[in-house]
Image (cartoon, rainbow, N blue to C red; front, side, top):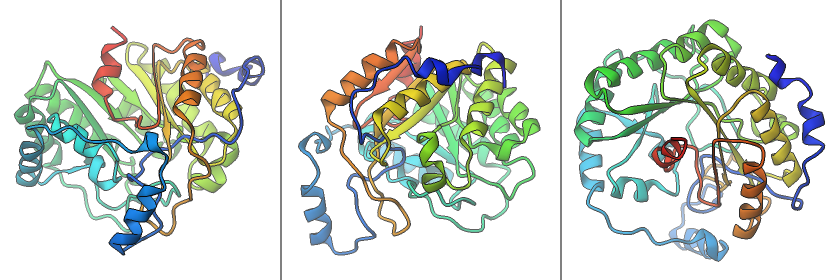
Length: 330
């Protein structure tokens, strides 16, 4: 890790928190559900959400076109796989965050709705089909993520690079954001993915260091920081980005500490949103719903750390409104 990361704990000690019990969330559903099948029970659970987590989705003309394109080209989205609460909003505006190499993930993070299992072989034509979808939908900013593929020698890094290249060929004016796994710490894989030169290189920290064993048992806090540090060192002009969840039992001061660690490795853009439990028996319950006022205070504190872009509110997700976040950086 570079010298930027030295002394990050000392820097964090100078940051004052705004309270306790806050947590941020990642891939969540539109309610903290516990593997429910009864519709009435689901509705009762949704009614228990705080009012700021209930929103109406404006009607838009883009959803049918997005769904038809995805079906024809046999593509998946993280919006569907991760059961994101913003999915309809994005589709109504003609947007989608694409999911590579799915649907099965080789890890079992306890915040995520993606299905764990044994993946099949890679589809060599997937990058080309995805690039066609970006062109057909007229996307100005394409967001590409994947399941984690620890079964592959390079973790899928070459597949990411092929996808970036295909999008560049089909839609040279489109900016590209990739949200990558940690590739099990393989620096050769890191180099392949970073050297594809996306406009934004995103890897989510997801939660605070203290909770990694419980929330992300197969991941490592320092390994994730090392990947982001590596990316900024190797390609300084590429925007680096990371996301955190609240609501998993962390202290708000720990979120600030994690943000300080991200700035110490040169991360440019940060997202923080409320964790919402997916419909899966293995996922963790929500410990607390952080209020909009607390999010606003946290956002101000994070902006003071020097990030070029900060998105911090209950419905924030790493891929949601990614185009707007990128544009704010000029």
